[in-house]
Amino acid sequence: RVMELIARRQPVASDLRTILAAGSASLHLERIADGIVDVATVAGRGQLMRTGGVRHDLARMADTVATMTESAVEALIERQATATGQLIEQARALEELHQEIFADLADVHANGTDRAAAIHTDLASRSIKRAGEHALDIYEQAIFATTGQRVELGRAG
Image (cartoon, rainbow, N blue to C red; front, side):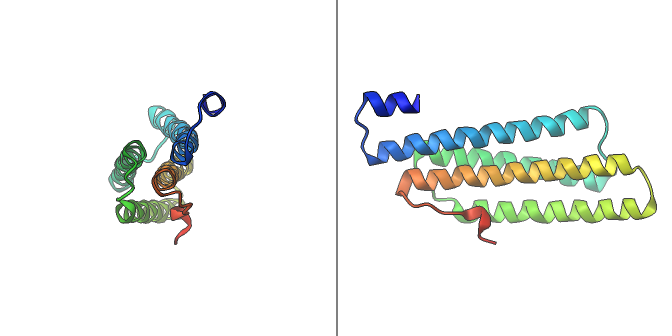
C-alpha cells in the first residue's frame, strides 16, 4: 500500500513521513505481538516461576508495555508526540523490573530449585522488556511523523 500511495498520489512531505512512520510502526507492533505470544505460550504451559514476587513483576511489566504501546500508537495516530518523558520513564521502570526478576532468578539458581522455570521466566521477562523497546520505537516514529526529527529514545540511557 505504501508504494501504491506514493506512486498514484502526490503526497506532500508530511504525508510521506506519516506513511513511512506507519509502515515502521506496523512492524514494531508485529514484533510486540510475537513476543507476547511467546510469553503467553510459556505461561500457558505452566513453565514460569510461581513465586509471588516474580509473577507480580512480570504482570507489572506487561501492564507497563500495554500502556506504552497504547500511548505510542495514539501519538502516531494523533500526530502529537508529547509524552516523551513519560515513555522514557516507563522504559526505565521496565528495565528495573527486569533487573529485579533477574536477581530473583539468580537466587533460585543458587538454591538449585526449578532451573527450567527460571530460564523460561528470564526469557519471558526479556520478551516483555523487548516489547517495551518496540513501543518506544513506535513513539520515535510518532515523533518523526509529527516533526520530521529522527530520535533514538531507546538508546538515550
